[in-house]
Image (tube, rainbow, N blue to C red; front, side, top):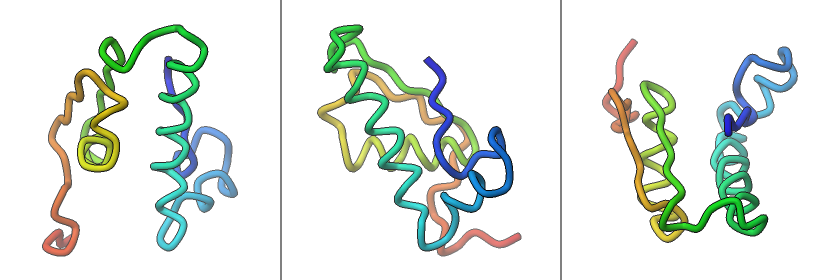
Length: 89
């Protein structure tokens, strides 16, 4: 399953803007909702649900690891940008 959460560019500028800055939490809520739906639909269990993300998706995986460890049996957090206070462009 590929979760097209708000903040991505897949559905145009409005979709992208809907997950930025003060609305960043919407990206995390969207991803959690996808995971919960997979479990509720009995497609998988939390034990068999895995998530993978890299770079900015690694930040998402870090957030899932901290906020919903009960929902995922495995998280692959690749090349994450986790310390955003120290990140410089």
